[in-house]
Image 1 (tube, rainbow, N blue to C red):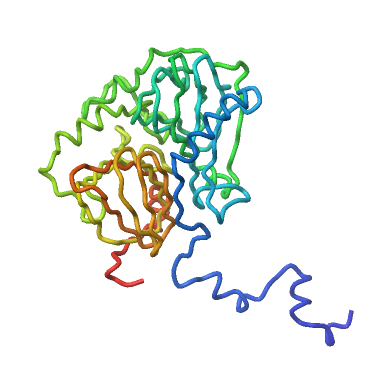
Image 2: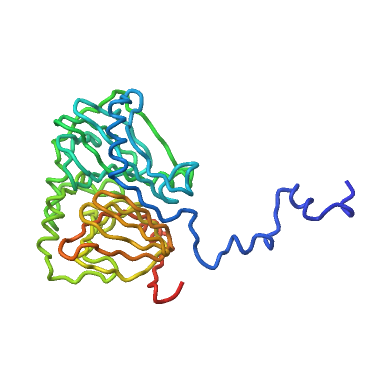
Length: 347
């Protein structure tokens, strides 16, 4: 081939290279720009569909009866935000879900129902509304409903991040349900007492050893704080679920928080380089995300992509709004990539 007459760019392309100067602006943007968009999933619209599939689809057909909350710009593969996933799962009395494990970290925030439980690495953990149940990376887990009605919960996972890093593994347990090798709820009963830790236990892995952070404890914490703390001008009175061994996030890839927005709360707008998914435990209000107004009610879920300017407002003048959130902030901080900015600093 006579390279003197060939297109120099074509020669470079065929050699498996590319000129940096043609991509410089897209590779090194002035600031982050997420593919995901602000979006809200309304529980009142999705709950009837979940109940429909209880009758229309057995667990043998579906295995996990889950409605994935898919961002309009992240459909293939489906994700809620670029690094995080949310789904609504339902299980009804008498049903069990196959035990399995995966490298993705996961949790369950219980929305409604009573009487179901999950077994995580041999420990059966009971579910109640408002409870936060952890399934850390590579822990065996299965579910069963021994109550009298359906259980519905919010699933949160980091599989979009794990898959992006090409580090995902998945394995099915040899039996449908794993054997219970530990007393029920033992991790919660051992670790839930504030700053008191059992001395005979040692850290195992990077995630919190607590199977269930019960709503009763979270509610008591908010009650004890009362109106004596102003909290944050951005997030109100926000509490973080922590790993008792490190004081840090519950999992190395996911941080979980619960916040109370007092009546009439109008949050200061800000942004940060972490993705965040919110679930409304109680109350009503709105969040403005890059000028998109998301009006939310009880049990709705909404997504705030990285580096979008957002602010939260409690729509009631007399009642608190309680909002759960989870974020990839632990990843951003561990990599030295976390940054936040108030809206007053400019866009």
